[in-house]
Length: 283
Image: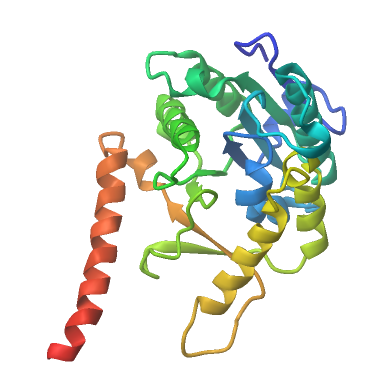
């Protein structure tokens, strides 16, 4: 696999030859930053963890140079942070038994450049070699520009594939905006209960971020637990931990479907749900 950036890496934790390592992929997550995959796509990790016939893999698109730094990391240079973040992400891949971990090493500026073909080319090459059944990425309503840019690049890459080679499911996940606003009929509820220790181990790897004063690990687990409790107002909790996703699969079934229009329709349905409840008093 030849990736565009000389700093890009392809890590295979169990040392399997590259073609076999990529082709065994069943679930793939494509995130912007080191740690995004562990926060948003734990459902895929959990689904595949030590399960015969299933294998999770990850792609991280940025190089980590722009990471905030505090505490013992305050004086780290951009080059230092790139090395630290790359190592953290590969360690998560080891813990989670990923089939492969690709780090494309782009800057956020490069990913947000609509005329730069390299990110889409790299994603296309990895998708053609791995042929996942399920793909997790950022949701289009995320408030982080780089997250949205990665999602758009991924959809462009997926649409280059013949429809017979596209994943069966594409899910847009929660990071910098959750999805509990979506009407229940529209959101995909993903049960991530049962292995809190694995989830915390994966998130705890990213010390360079957590030690700097951003307790992403506690916040993420809190969000999952809150979703499980607030999912149903008239019944007891059915699961312990829950994440929500936006089903982006229709965007792969119909290449003419505009991403913005698709999300705007979901927002209108949310508006309709709110208006309907407000109208109950006046019937």
